[in-house]
Length: 208
Image: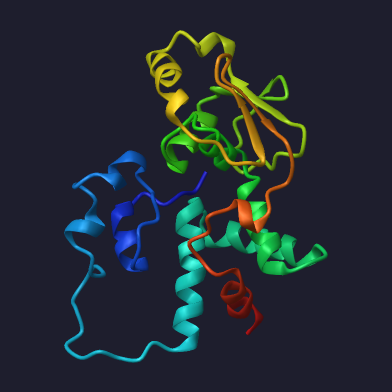
């Protein structure tokens, strides 16, 4: 599975805002955006006007960075969003949110999407009673997500039981905190998602 292996803090600095790629570290004084808020690389000596195309590219890259997706896979999601009825930008956002690794993150099973992806890849997550190790798998309304019973004795799971009470869950999901079982109640709406990018700009980027 292809994935970005570089320093993720550079991605936040390049985007100009926190994308919460390192979980709890982003809330501490160790956050690179708080230490070095400027983009990586040599800084220009003069301020230049940012073109519309550059703004569109930045929004598209922010979406990719947020969900940890490479360009080829992101274009497939966009093509699927275009074929659906409704607003393409909103369709794209909903599709990205319905990825299994994102749902695991939204349920509080992981502190970041990268960590959630690793949990799925390592076979810790059960989807509708079956082990699923594909992070990009799209969940549906009524699906249940829980921990693999054989792995509930792990140190990570024991820590999760203690910390999950303090975590909030999106309104389109429900969580049985006692048994660590999540359920997809409905499809997310744009209002349910705290998107850090503009879907309309992404549509304009691919429309050229």
